[in-house]
Image (tube, rainbow, N blue to C red; front, side, top):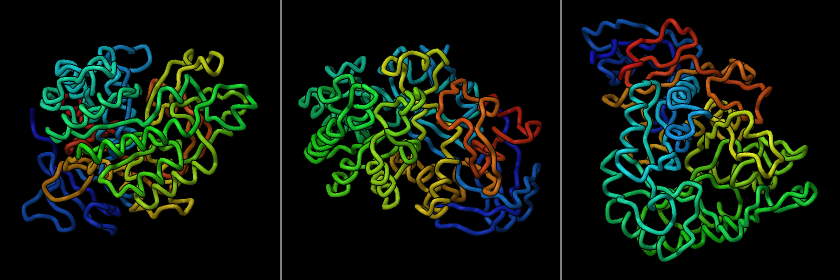
Length: 437
């Protein structure tokens, strides 16, 4: 494999929250690493120059939850299609939850996913291994072997671990190996196969509800076990305000993320039985949405993710409770996060931190930063560019998003992974070597 080109990115405005950089600076890349920021090294000759005038240059985005549907559900999407969509959205690293088919509960599956991602070359894919065999919640997986095979964390995906003793053993074992446990807090009995937030909208539409207590009860249990075991617990995809308060008040070294769409949509968006708003955990009340936003603002929630779940059109065409939950979110992660800036919730540097160094810190990886010597993973975007999300605009095979037709501000112009151009709004600029990293 030959080395990537030497590249200079000039005239851009660098924002790197990890290093508290927020100013106009040039950036120089060699051998897939950041060589220099600001000054041009003596003898450096750029084989390619990107003029980033009027653009923001920031670390490549890191997405903590993106289902790529391969292996097992290739009729919905593939690793190649979804990592291409990720690159178009400025994402250079994404985490793949373990509920593939076969499940990521063996090193072989973890290694296969990473191999296919390297073949596609658009995005770094980090598998999340299964906490329990077959995600059944009964027997511990081979955690150490999964960690060795490249799994950056372990999770039971969308299946709650109902046995509290099993969860305790899991967290004890994970703590022994320094493994982060990704938990989606939900009491399966209180969920009771619901499909919407238990409240006035679900009652009016006749939809089975999931009370906020389903999340709150699980959070309380998980916090108690995190304190008992010393395991680093990360809470995935929070949906309720009470959960945010409990995490904030716990003073435990736990972390949390939220899906970008939860910061903008509520139960009111279900009116008309809009199946593109069928998600689990469900969209909750206006007060919950505001509490989630406050959690993002005060860093109780340190990462915003896409919770990307692409589906084929038929999966959203049944009666609402029978439709497949999930939103295709890779290509709206950055613009939705930037919308928080427009609405005055965050400044631009803090917003970018929630999708770069925030998730990198949760994963304990030296990514999401523009330090000299670090991997040249970069996102360049035009903060003033207005655009509309259409199906023609999307590279993801899943067009299941309630944001179709929305106008966004902020458009990715270039994405670089390890110094290779993996997306450009001028496609002829893309380095063909990006396909073979």
